[in-house]
Amino acid sequence: MRTKVKSTRNRPQPAASAITERKQVEKALPYGEEYFRPLIERALDVIVVINSDGTVRYESPSIQNVTGYTPEERQGKHFFDLIHPDDMA
Image (tube, helix red, strand yellow):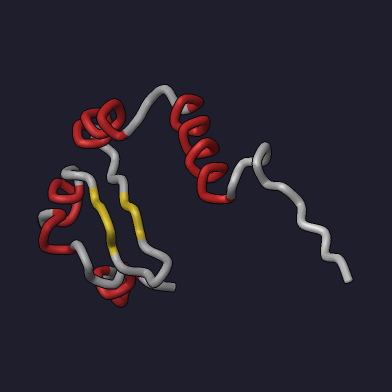
């Protein structure tokens, strides 16, 4: 009884493929966080990033001008807990 074994010598391994793909994506994105962060932090509009569970991950500093709360006071709280009941439909 014989068993055939295929060589993987000339094929990329899954981990190597993932690393290569990530490097390609990083090269394709010429602007990273260091480019956009100053723009977001100086924007007059409020920018909010919410996690999939509804908790606030990031709010731009302009949130304080609109709500009176600092971004640090609201970070980690559920987004809907921060909205006045009269403002919800």
